[in-house]
Image (cartoon, rainbow, N blue to C red; front, side):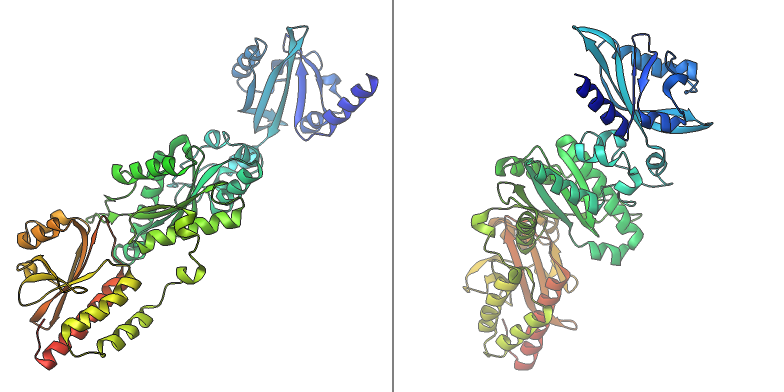
Length: 482
């Protein structure tokens, strides 16, 4: 028993936290060495038998007295923030207290506290900063609870978005693996963010990032945490949804509610439509280590981008495991142009040109088919030559070089005949390019998709525009029609 007492004393005197214990009248009975060092006392004699009020450690002692009275009634407290005066300076502390029992009755309390003044000072938000997580919210997670004892909130949160910084959100994911805690890991990529920056300015891009971040945190709620991976990429760690069906429900509601994506964000006089692409995988179902989990998420994200963005993809080994880095490394626009040019020169017939070119477009742009509208005013499949409907008013729709949308209702009043054909074929998104030079129009080529709210990319615009111009130049020179 004496050895145990000696060992206990040694342990108490070597821990870094300030430890104290009191009787039922809240009078000090003992403290450890860290406590004495913190206050600058040579021995505990100066405070034994006294209360906090006797020592004058608090400007307002009443909250602390009430806190300890609750503990003496059987309640425990954990890391409650407070302040105490040390050598004339007010310091920030966090304190935990619990009752001491003997033979089933409370005979006192034991407590500990840490000085967190420096981290707290680093946690005060700078003017205009967006803060999406409070210290109390993050302390609910054991990883951040330990981290915030020594690290300020400003160090933990991204200065622009208010999300958790890359280093800490990734380290948090790794800590979950160490503790064998299942979770879903998702990477979210804002669609066409470069276009927003280039068109509206970087200040507007910052507004979009902040708004999307705020919406993501609100939507995720207590299911997990959100961090900024870098640029316009965001990481979401979901502790509640840990299988395919749960994730399907979670992300489906996110898109359908339009509270995060598929909504307009006000930027002065403009309201750009904001969408995002998500790839996710589950630990440990899909991968049991960080590198493999990240690779699985990357493959799912790649698959979503190749489908046209503006969607979520949940990793399935049967569909995504075979994807390699070679697949993810997208071919350059130059390589696509070069292949199209070779194919274009391989035949003299315009319809046959379109048929061959469509095979490359299917592979490189992942489109189901390419269609064209010529002098007949019919919408025709370039792959089969089959007429799928009328589009005699398509000129009214494409008033510039190209037209694209993932909302067919926008076509209804502009070109009702074309609209009816789109509806009859269940097309939801389309990219139409004029085949013409100067004021002369020879026809139009179209990529249209079913069951997809595809977001068309600038390089896809470029490929279709170049193809249309090559075709227009050929028709002008040869005198042929489509």
